[in-house]
Length: 166
Image (cartoon, rainbow, N blue to C red):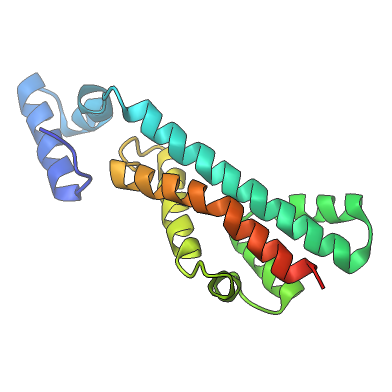
């Protein structure tokens, strides 16, 4: 059996493990990822998603730091304030406060209307993976992350130029 990520399929596989190994449903759930989760590409797929999310977050933090520096004129304070945001939602709010437009609007203005939607989807799957779901990252998520990595430098450069160059 191959996991496509549906809850129904996962429940069927857990039931098959339970029956084949004579386990309780609780024990079958515990060994599910060990029994069916191995793949030669599994680690590579997850690494791509984790690294791309980190890359995007770093580019976004750098942009926020620059915007805040331009507002208050002190780099260290700007850097420290961005570090304190701690969540993507708060970073998006800070962006809107500093620019007067949402990140979505800014993305559309530089020709990347879908970037935030794709980023949030990949980020959500990365978070699910990091918090214990070994099957949260599938091939389609990895492909989307890779495409985001290709778009990110142009996107953030265009956004930075639009927002900071008079």
